[in-house]
Length: 182
Image (cartoon, rainbow, N blue to C red; front, side):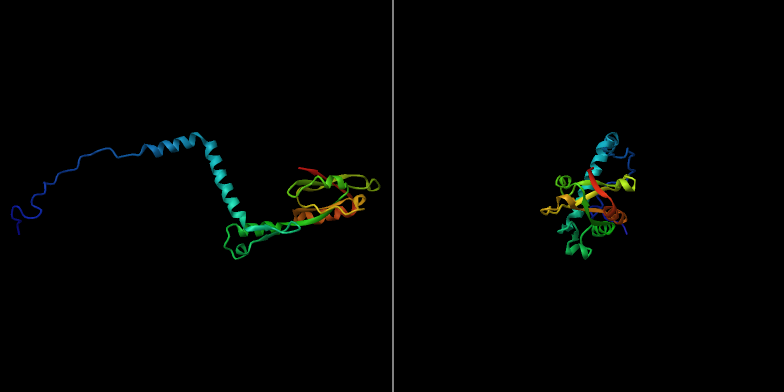
């Protein structure tokens, strides 16, 4: 069946071959990649900023309890908060240990959040050796000094790894403890 002249589609031009041409490239993306590679420090810094922001956002589901213990918010226990599993894992690894430091004046210099090394000095009858029993322990609380107890030293609560807690508390029973700020 032939199409009469003037009918629909008869005025279309004849088909012909499409000419060859170079592909279209967007130069901006390639230049940005080159610039990023040239400025690696900026790229690393940007990555660190993004990572830090994500970690801060994930850590907002906790609150500080008296005694320095952290408690997850109710929504974190249900698994709704991002990072809840990480916080639970960290909590299981550290404990809060009460430690009596021999020099009460030194303890008055401490604030919650400070990092300290705890040093045990044995009595001279036992050899008089000094050793570090806890590295980088975090001060969680400094209770008020009671009247008349300054000669006994002062109590401080430290967050330490569970593995170091027994050695730290045991050293306090047999030696005089001192702290140095990290």
